[in-house]
Image 1 (tube, one colour):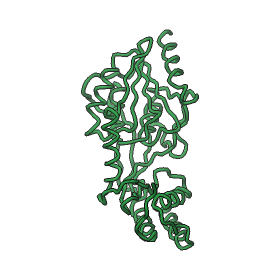
Image 2: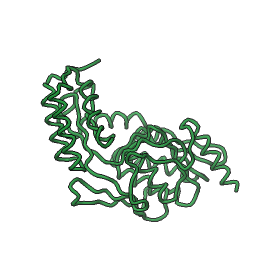
Image 3: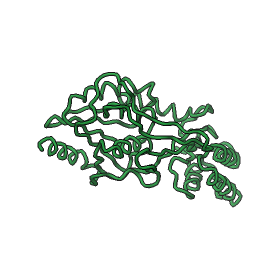
Image 4: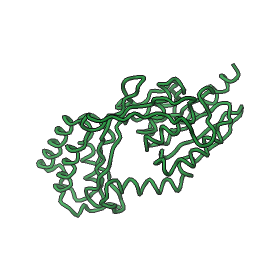
Length: 301
């Protein structure tokens, strides 16, 4: 069912443009995008009565300059709180409660190869530490491990570091985040200690990827790949490396604006626009069988 905007599109556009200028990590592009939104508004491109249609039109324009998939006007069917980030947080909590905390599957395959699926998100660490620790500790005894990120659409950078900590032996620099304005940066490291048992940094590790793998899930795959710790198997990921924040600009519309950019200490770059490129390319639906076969071959060798 569609939803009336109940506000002139001009108010939504003005507020979205203001947020982009104030918060987007690339100030020069922010000015271009704000000008584009205002020009399109003046041309009548946003003269629609439906919030979902307005979100689609504005998102297409926001992503037209540099293809940043985190930069969106997102439609919510149910009204959301005006509090910053409330729309995203409410949806996250529902997903968390119905996915065993983001670790919906732990399975042992033939040959002592374990599978841990992390989906649909890497939830905030204050929620997810317990279920993730339980899943990864259970899998720690396996001879080889497959981490399935094919249905993971992103989440929290702290949770990425937490998961990486179970898959490495030593405290390791994973990523550096450069925030809006360029005056502040923040390094991400794996943890020196974890609850439960580590799988560790030496046994065979595979990561499954697909065209739905996005954002923080891409960081997890990219970090492990660049460190030479994991073999990525499947399809290229979507290509979103910029962490974002959300602001409610209308009861059914949330503007999400990237406020930082990630730089990997090994590659000196990130996966923005390109996605994480698999080490072994195959259809996502075939990647589990392919990774299992690779693991068995390595263990046999």
